[in-house]
Amino acid sequence: MTHSEKETGTQAASRGHVLLVSPRTFSYHISISETLRSMGYTVSWWDERASSATWYKLALRLVPALTVRWSERVFMERLSQLDLASISHVLVIKGEGLSKRMALEIRDALPQASMGLYLWDGVENVKGVSNILSAFDSVATFDPVDAKSFGWAYRPLFWRSASLGSEMPSAPLFDWCFIGTVHSDRHRVIHRLRQRDGMQGRSFVFAYFQSPLILFMRRLGDWTLWFAPKGSLSVKPMPAAEVAQKVACSRAVLDVEHPRQRGFTMRTIETLLAGKKLVTTNKQILISNLYHPSRVHVISRVSPEIPTEFLEQPYVAVSDALRSYYSCEGWASELLTLQDAARNSRARFGVQHAPG
Image (cartoon, rainbow, N blue to C red; front, side, top):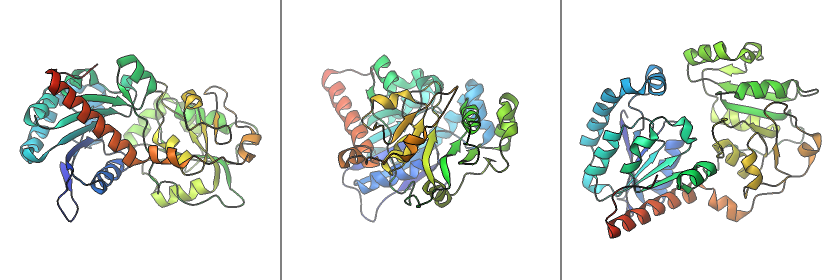
């Protein structure tokens, strides 16, 4: 499939047709689409970017104005191929690749549909988001601080039940592991933690970079990457089965959030819901319903340290109610209900613009 994908069951969906516009990030768009389909929806998926090429991603971040016209042509072509009358919901995740014109074109072409925007990044990291807000009935975010500041709905991310897999063996190989994309100061924090006494031989790190060019550029600004152990840096993602195996051999999973966000990463939720201990730099977890001292330890970015007592303490399981709340179905259901309610409210009072 090229610019869009349509995923349906063997029978026509009875609950509506969702246009999902989201990044192609670690197959999360597939998990969301499959969940929506299992809930009874037909799903059409668009990549929120007009291209997956590295040059386009860099231009979108560094000089977004240069990508606008070409991106709009791509999105208009996608829109022309869509069965407009069938769409009941539009769910946009992040929306960094959408211009104001394109967001409003979608709004005008689908007057019968509710439209919701969900941010799974801090607002400071989503270029141009303020330009597209007026196209949406509702705006929700994974960041509790952004939600409070802008008057948006707060909804944490979700977990995928097959993400981490196996139980820990009786003799774990690692005290902690990190498997994920490198950004901001993430690798510097990892490097500092590795240097702690007794930790060098008890950790596993797999730092992923989207392309050789991005790895090269990161190395120019982060000297710790030059001292990374052989095999710990990669421009190819680790297969899911291998991720599960490495996590299963570890006492805890390390998460280092971006300095400009406060929301919980997917790794945070997947780790805890899979029954693994979490070591994180995100202090917001201390006031979360996921927090328990047996399963979460917060570290400093500057002087990180993991107490042996934390690693050896028995893990207190997350409740079934929280597992349901943090499921992908719970996440999707809340967002669609939110945007439907906002759409109906605006229609009743004749309001045309979303808050924010």
